[in-house]
Image 1: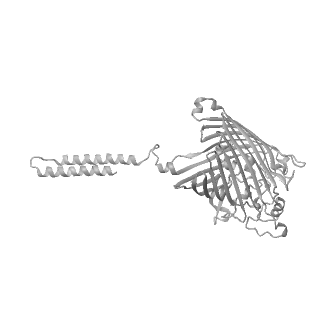
Image 2: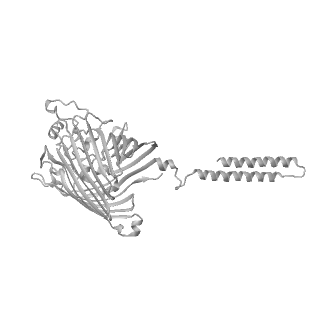
Image 3: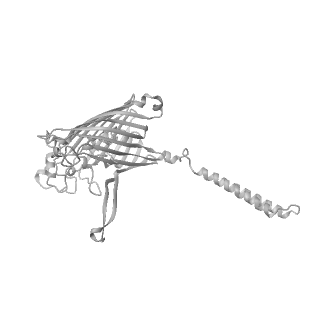
Length: 471
């Protein structure tokens, strides 16, 4: 821009001098047409210079400003899915299974769409955020109620999804060994919470076991100390509010205890969580994670009357081990998670009389374990391998039970909460960030007392993405 102004000034000065010379000389005469032509040439030069300067101000795809490359981070993940289930979705299907033996249903869905945004302020300070839209978000419409003579306007929910701020944290990095993070963040207990992106599992949907018994994606306002060593050891230790036992249930154990029906998260009781990951061997990741904290009286109705509840704490203890191996065109993943709830019988008794609690039995012990393996056949072709295309044929087995034990003892009550699930299918990745998935799954339910539950087969397809976006 400065170069254009300077060049224009020189041309104007030359014109001025020339004009004075022409005006003072008796031997030289310039016609009006010649003078106007010279002015037009100067204006054309100015326009050409301005266009060149403006072009330099607009970055091309290969000229993204350094502050965007080095500081701004934008990414996300999501799934578009469809499935056909050859079993009933009626809530009474486990009470009178024979009645619903031949039922089935289908679904088209957007299970998750997530946008990640982060920024590095410099000097070790940064922030990160994650906004999630589940099942297409929430939509509402205004309509005039005709039965009220047009005098009443109502708002109706058109889609019962969810929009949530799953992460918002500020971080101070002192060095690789010491990082402090505060704010809403993922609690990385179990394989699924630590690695929940759409390309981190083979199935069209998230693995059922951990998804059933643990919050997913588990996020809380927490204080975290974390870091990593040069030997491939990554560690996290977290202080956070405890779960809410009012919201525990037989079907999902402690899954819904992490949320809050209020505008804030109650913290009458507290908990701790930790995770260790070892990545010192190429292609291998080993993870160990755990959680421990009280859950009773962590609600607005925390003034529990009665001597019988005086010493009830409802301590939740969770331990989990997971692994991933990638090499020789093979991807292998596995995990086992076990959880225990203290005072489960007393919490069940209290919840049965509470106005705000789930009025179902709560297990003292829950379990979820699974393993999956896939082979990349495109890895056998050098051209496809160079193009980073992948085509996996995979199989998965898992077992889970949200009512594994009641009051510490095996139980056949609500046996439908436990099942073996087998799945097989295909994953095609035309590029590393995009996947096309298809699977067939078959769940075999446990047998209850004098009752046989229907198996739950399903076919599903989906297209997923996960990655960072370049501005």
